[in-house]
Amino acid sequence: MLSSRALAAALLVGASHLLAAQGAPAPSRADSLRALRVLRRAPIMDGHNDLPWRIREDTLHPMNVEAYDLRGRAPGMTDLRRLKQGHVGAQFWSVYIPGERGDAAYRANGAVTSTPGYARVQLEQIDIARRTIARYPALAWTPTAAEVRASMRRGRIASLLGLEGGHAIENSLAALRQYHALGVRYMTLTHNVTLDWADAALDSAKHGGLTPFGRDVVREMNRLGMLVDLSHVSPATMSAALDVTTAPVIFSHSGARALVDSPRNVPDSILARLPRNGGVVMVPFVTAFVSRAVKANGDTLQAFIEASLRRHGADSAAVRAEIAAWRRAHPTPAATITDVADHIDHVRRVAGVDHVGIGSDFDGITENVVGLEDVSTFPALFAELARRGWSDADLAKLSSGNILRVLERAERK
Image 1 (tube, rainbow, N blue to C red):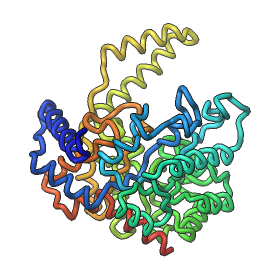
Image 2 (image 1 turned 180 degrees about the vertical axis):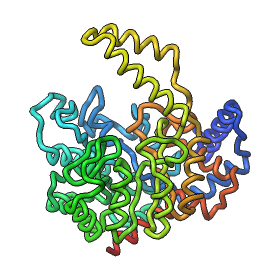
Image 3 (image 1 turned 135 degrees about the vertical axis):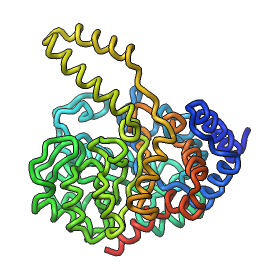
């Protein structure tokens, strides 16, 4: 059996071949070995992995932590062996729930139920995550930065929770406090739906950012030591939160809007405010966020779908046939490691090297960046950045140094 180092080195060689095939300069063996050396000393602290949701939605055994075994090759993008191969030392496990009422996710033991309040589903997701962490000795429950650092030194994978979507608090600061007590260490203020107190990036703006209650949410998160996550929110909400917060913010999985004009990415005007705030943008591996070509293809498809619906009305079979034909004629372009590295470089250029991190969104994505298919592949990205001239010290900041600093500052309240 190959050692984890040999497996990682082989992975980097494969990634280099992919880059060469795409016409991009490939990292040298020295770049790859340097990336591995840095990651052995400063492992990845990934800002966003949706494994709890993947377990909930598993086709064969929904919501069954015991059946979804991480000791072998798991069906998704995450398992223990691949986490080690990827030099992941710490993980924010996302405890996401949909913000749209009536979603099929509201079910218990595989059966669709009457729609509960958000809180019940949120508690179920926290339960899935906590039981998963407790099940495996390779994972360690580490709700503080000091415990994360200690776990990394012991070679275990430090585990924290990130709550994706402020709809889960149901307009209650008391609920927010209880989620913190259960181990939630960041909350994304919105998901895709504008709330009674905060505007979302992918929904209509109703408040010009945050309402007075929304500002109270940010203040209470500061008091608790919970990170304010501004992925998914509108630019006005980003700006309002930066006006209010006394602690560094994070963007747990967002790219640079100057490179790809997605509403989910961060404008340069906000990036320029991060040095004063101290926060960090954690760049994702979401193809439509990092690749202009993928984003353009998706926009064109959406326009075609809307036109097809207008043409055919209730004839859903005709609509499906037209969409299938369009997809065959217009295959989705490939997003690449170089696209992701470009976003990381852009955040570094505008905000500074102290304000960038990694937020993969593994197990929350359906299409992969070529060369970044699962949690084993992080070293390939670091080899590309080494090729671009990143120093060992700056690579270590990207991998985990920056987000640990932010977490420590938030804990000091």
